Image (cartoon, rainbow, N blue to C red; front, side, top):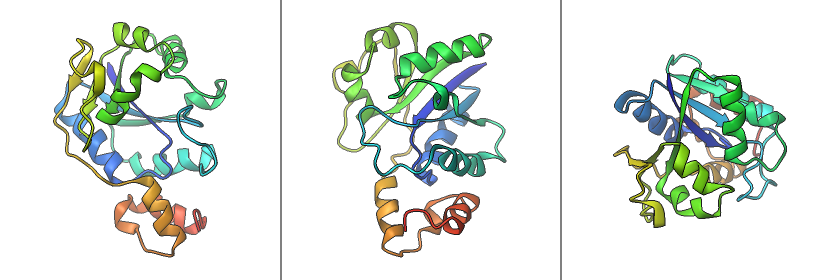
Length: 190
């Protein structure tokens, strides 16, 4: 199978993440999309992250009824901060039967030169890129490993959702209902 890896903190997961993942699962040659919940992105501050297992549960609740989605906690037991190149090595070891590709927004493609071993990633993996307003993909936008996918542009931000929740706003329609109920019951981000 060809698996698209959608890395993120998913802090929290929201409908924007799901729309993009669904587009890749249904409108590209990917057989499945795996949400790889990252404990810590080395390019982002860690202070506002919910506990790893709560974020994993939020994703699990969001995707449990859709057979083309899976959630992965593979990075939870890897040294931190996590680097995509190390995660891919562990995935190949654990699932040698699968072919893996990366899914990222054009804004992340612009930061790729700052990633550990980014040249190795470009030479060994396909990178599926979705559009983001104000981002053109940077220096690798026309690289042979980069495949642009005309997925919907989703301008929903987990940062804005956390802020809205902390202000007492009802954001239930920005998240899958099961995930929202869990988040609300646990009183997260308040």
